[in-house]
Image 1 (cartoon, rainbow, N blue to C red):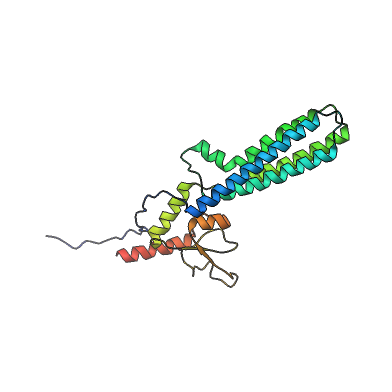
Image 2: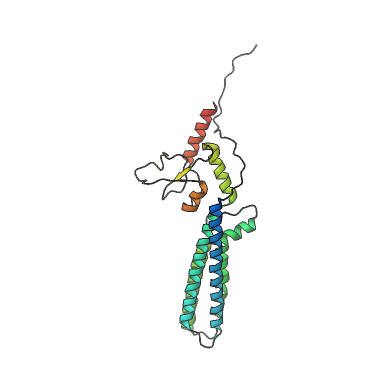
Length: 242
């Protein structure tokens, strides 16, 4: 004879199964990314051309310090602008992390270009026997400083992959529904599923931004979901399934 059993509910967040989707940038973002990359490549090529010119100047009997210093500054400016444009393109059209080498090169190309553009010149300045002690010190210091700035700017310390965008977008869709927006603030570090989330609905917050996961990363370098919003959405899903 059947008897009544005690039922113990296991408190496990319930979410919809996330659909496996591939991230595809919008045609507009793809176009912007291509344009930014082309401009960055042109700027880097000009910087390398100036490097060749500067190396040629180092081989002259009389080295013009003004020309050398101007060349170093010009190389640095071009390299930095190129890196910023390249990183912006990567936010619009990120690389896939399936190919580790390609993913690394695409995200750190700015730093690689800085090494190509400056390291040979720094070595040649330090080993040049025609430069006097003071002149060599000034040029070497300037080259090292500009090289360091260009290399640091060229490093992407927070790269994102196409898979990460796809995963985060699918998670938002599974929790909030298709085409659901996310929200973030000017100084926030996470995007939110609810505009009335306690972390952004405060007197200190004057403006909310609404958009997609890729836009949050593109505009504010945000790629993580608010944990409070996630728990709230999971709880709402659990209630709906009961």
